[in-house]
Image (cartoon, rainbow, N blue to C red; front, side, top):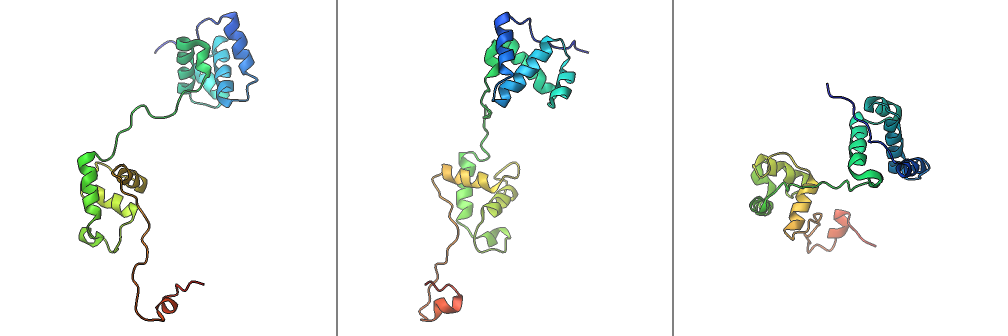
Length: 172
């Protein structure tokens, strides 16, 4: 079993900044200060986590961060992923575009127009993606290709003068 991890010995200035952080309105700073001061009192990470209502890995991350950066660890970092993997590479994205130019019935669907969810389902069935993706992923991929996804609209008009009344789409 590994020995428990604690913060390094605090300087007087670091201790004052951590104690001052206990009055912070920023929840991240407040929690970090509580964790680090408890660790300075030689409390073990699982115990700190239990008292603070967080995970023990959160406590260990805070301690490691403080030991590396000092009080700069009180500034929240970005939660943005460091690396993003596109669900569709360029070739598969173009295949998606070609697929959407064909009727859904060709792929065994009962609809006459595509929805984002249906396009996501069919793209997985056709092997364009390795896992099921969301409709939002389809929309973002199409946007990357310069295609805007719009809701289906009624385009059919009739020469019948009563057409709009009969269809229930009378305006005005």
